Length: 321
Image (cartoon, rainbow, N blue to C red):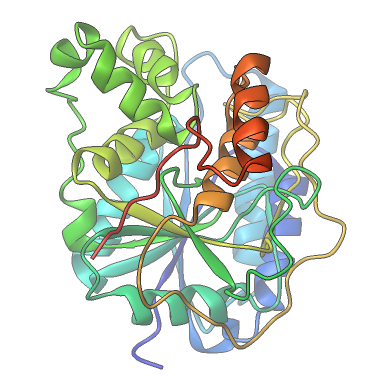
């Protein structure tokens, strides 16, 4: 394994979540050999006593133990917000180390998480069409993989913000100002193509550009799309999200995406030829698209299969070399 990637953790005002995240990270196989950067955001101007106390409690927790081999804490006096904290923090660390593994304060990682992330970073470093490595995958109930699919990862047009990694040359290609937005607004074809990553991605971009959603990840998703790039995602998740309880800045309470058993695999079969498996593309489409394929299209697809013809309404795969 090459030089280990640093880990960047962003925390704010959730002491219980932060402690669970750090305890799990500490149990990782490579934690004792890794450097951890912790960015602690500061209080908002109108913060009440309860919020100030929560921020103080978080800072006490991050200083309480030697969570990894080396721990570097960066505490902000002012509130930057999650989006700006991640943009500036990742940029700062990745310029120094050329790569980074990124986490937020509500992610429980498998003990094999750092091993998987570092191995994937090494394996795909020279594959410039790979823009990110994801540590999270939807539960099997939402993404059931074919029994004969033998790889431990798959190609995805949608990157995950729940435990991920990238390299400096990919991160530097993100257009944070989204200069292409005006063109996208007036081009339904581009919008539909972007929505191959899920029919919510253009909507998120629109809300972000209109100032109604304060997120960073949609610009990173757009960078994948604009550069014909992909994310590598595990078929079994190394991450559980414990923050879907309304406690976070962008967390919801309507999702049930918890994995009962985290992936503990230590050796991985990576895709050497990067391609979208048509079966997985359709499973992915079903999982991430709110507007399902019309019944008449399903009937025609089924009829074509019966007579050994190619179904006309499948999403086509694409080779990424």
